[in-house]
Length: 541
Image (cartoon, rainbow, N blue to C red; front, side, top):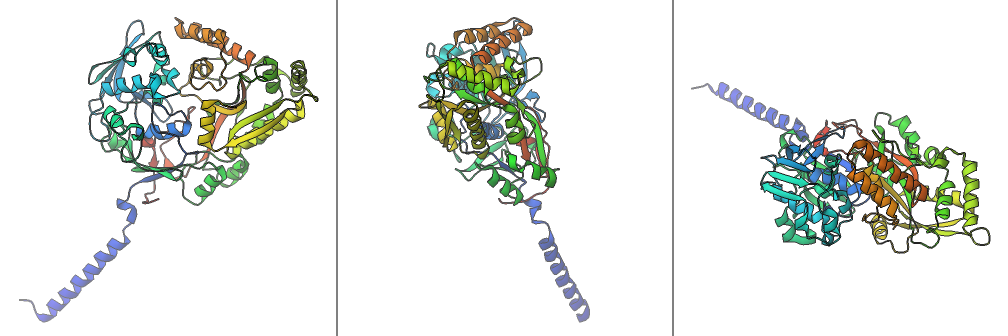
């Protein structure tokens, strides 16, 4: 038995030990068990998360986290295996066989099968689906006939040999097929999930996805919260537990949120703040070329814009050097061709791209006068643009150039992004549309096909048989050289007719916190959160 003094000493020691342990618990970093959170700005609110009907950059950014196609992309933008762990092609390059991973799973734990891809691809080209992006899958056998309603979706060149083997049959050799398959139109959807909830299947609590993340919360015009999908085949390599997407139409407001610590990654940065960012946050400013073109789409069914002389005059009067040095200023390049420069393709630029601005204006005045417009009969146009600050400023600058050089009276029809997108799709009452196109993959086809008469996103309503025929020749070409030559002829036709007015080639600009790593600039600006690493851990919003 211990002496009373020893017992008291022992009790005191126990109390001190308990106090020490409690203090140690209080002192432990609360973030040790908290989720790793990444907060991304994402521009305008997305219109949908349905892979087969979405067609905006904002939707694609989120879908790359939620879904995974047969192939995916690494940090540099290079194509890597996705759900398909390997594939092979036939000797004539018309049949592609994809072998799916045995551990590919939906977010509910069920297996991703070849039938899921068959269902999604058929849905993507079916007229009743309402998607405007079916043209991107036109290389599949019978795709165009299905989209036109001439054949049932079951006749599409896609089949499941078994649960893990998918076969795609093509109309013609398609060297860019793997790039096509990175587009959301080729993502799988779970049929049971879609048929159970219908149009509501993409909502939080209902959506079943197969990517690295699952949709946990969607509060329109506030935020979207994605959480790590534990059933994803590569889940052990995913460090970020939650990614929050914040829609912010106003770029200045997004910058304020970043400076306040509410965002780790911005969608963009106001041009007016570039100099400030270069001086104040040089280590956080990221600028890079982007495979895309800013342009004006002209409604060629409009009485005035039906005249090629009018379209050419409007194109000539725009000073692209002013747009890229005074407005954009992120490394954008003036565009006199529609297709951006890329490997193995030389864009076909308008010959007047080599003229001085004064020479262009003189020719523009001559053409507009020849079309019957002048001081006594000024040309009046309406320009459809969304409410984002940068694009409003761009259109105001162009309207000013037209007024000064040609006396053209252009007014802005500025609409909230969703309304703007709807107006573009319907084409009712539109004359000039501020538009942009980002390449889904690095191939000129993805730009040129946009102007095909049957393309669901052809805002110009341009219907040119010669252009369509040249694209058909390119698609059926037996060599890469013949394919490129046919596409160059198609682009030459495009820049001669000008249903679109190229303005400049894009560059990305954003701010990224130093704690965010694991990503790198790439021409498509495709970034999968599964590659990201966040050095500091924090919980909540």
